[in-house]
Image: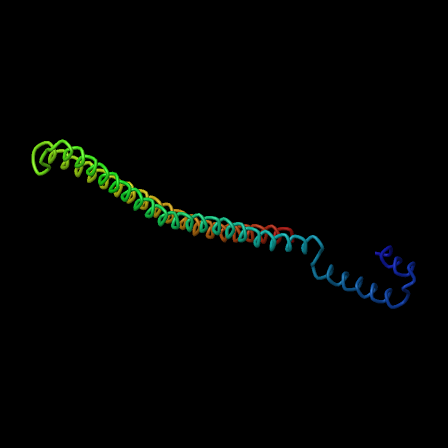
Length: 183
């Protein structure tokens, strides 16, 4: 303490600084007499920082999970558009196949309303229907999986927030107990 008092005098700051330093020393002595110490202040600061840090970590993890949930939700609309494109492509392929068959059978002089030509047309419709059903089922499965993933991420975000607060609370209580044991 005397070293600290000598520094302002050595620098030429004289009486005012020495008086302020002496008052600070008296305040420190009073604080020491009241049970407040530098170690106690540091422990309290560390406790507060630990609490803030635990809550911040929980919130950061929750924010990351919320972003992942939002991504999964936006992928649902992309999957819907891809499903529409798949179904459109199947319909276009069916129309092309029917047109090619009609041209081939008509070019050979076969009546398109019965026989092999009609059976080929029916088969083309069945294949297209199966393809459309498969594409719709695939789209619905993917969209529901993305919705489940979004729900899971939201639950993880909620859990991360709770865990952050729980860690903050237990860390604060632990440090408080440590502080009270120190006396």
